[in-house]
Amino acid sequence: MASTRDIRRRIRSVRNTAQITKAMQMVAASKMRKAQQAALAGRPYAEALNRVLASLANRVGSLSHPFLEKREIKKPCALIISTDKGLCGALNTNLLREVAGLPKNTVFVTAGKKGKQFVARAGRELLADFEVKDDTSSYKVKQISQFLIEQYLEGKIDSVSVWHTRFVNTLVQKPERTDLLPIGQLEKLAAGTGEHAKTEIKADENLQYIYEPNGDEVLSALLPAYIHFQVYQLMLDAKASEHSARMVAMKSATDNAKSMIKDLTLEYNKVRQSGITTELLEIATAQMAMA
Amino acid sequence: MAGKLRLVVVTPEGKTFDDDVEQVVMPGVEGQLGILPGHVPLLTAIQPGELDLKAGSRGDELAVGGGFAEVAGDRVTILTDMAVKPQDIDEHAVEKALESAKKALLEKKDGPEAAALMALIQKSMAQLNLKRKRRTNA
Image 1 (tube, helix red, strand yellow):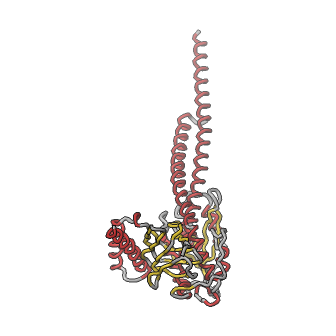
Image 2 (cartoon, rainbow over the protein chains, first blue to last red):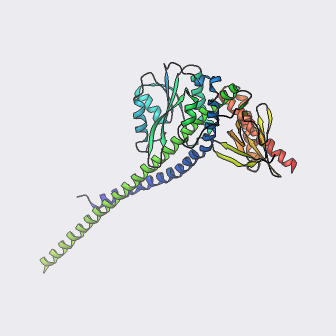
Image 3 (spheres, chains in turn blue, orange):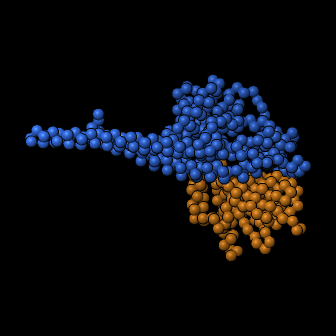
């Protein structure tokens, strides 16, 4: 049986761990709130953008743009949005398991250290790695989408899909794939674009828009804006997922530590009590022997 | 014209403005663009500048960044990456940002960063102009 001193030492160390995980849980919780708010704040913009795209879709027959063209896919590209740090449960593991099944000719662009490490370990082709800190200002994220757009237009990659975790709620985050480029059918896109399109989005078909300066130019300004925004929104979603997953992981770690402290305290008291009993017995025996 | 326009200004960070107005003047890429109720459906790109609106006797202004405007029926939707009310503009902060952006631009003449800096400068200018105009009027 361990001595009381050993048990005390273990209790202290477990308590320290619990304090740390508790602090991390708090930090994650406040970051999560912020990230969730940011993810929700983009919703009106997404709706408006979808509506405008839907209205363009009615005329897309007369418009053309490289983003809409389907080409033969020789080099697909996957953007992996992962986290920089661990301690967030199975978030990255789940995401990267999905990614591992991609065909061999896929090239990767990563945002977040975990994705980069994965690509390096798996010996896949890494095109670029972007650092994304908690500050997801649209300017930073734009560099990623801009890079993807340029690579796509230069023909170095033929399609772009984004692998990310969709934030469902605080307890559930789902790894998901969103196809970014080529955009394909505008109508389809306007009807059900990704996350926030559940609200009614339909263009008035009898509205004949005037385009200023002209349809092609509006389209060629609108589509990149759409791509930028899409990546930005996915990034926010991924951040919200990350912080939620971390908060939950840290909460369960704190709970585990607490129950461990309880068990150890019980054991400590048992050992202490048996020590006292032994001592009493010894005294009583000694007295009896003296008498 | 008795009708009203519903003006909605949205940015990726949220909804900035959502109310009934009588008139909107926006900085279109082809020049200032005035919208009154009953305007034909229009889809246009806008550039950084000022957005003027009139509601009753009250006028208001917003500094906006580049983006798009959609006019459909009696609804005007402005999609932009920035929209600030004059009272929210921190002149010193903007001036500082403008200075550092100009300095950075001198070092980097091209590439995506320069474009981003240019956009930043234009947006800062739009904010400053609006703030200064406000002051001279008052």
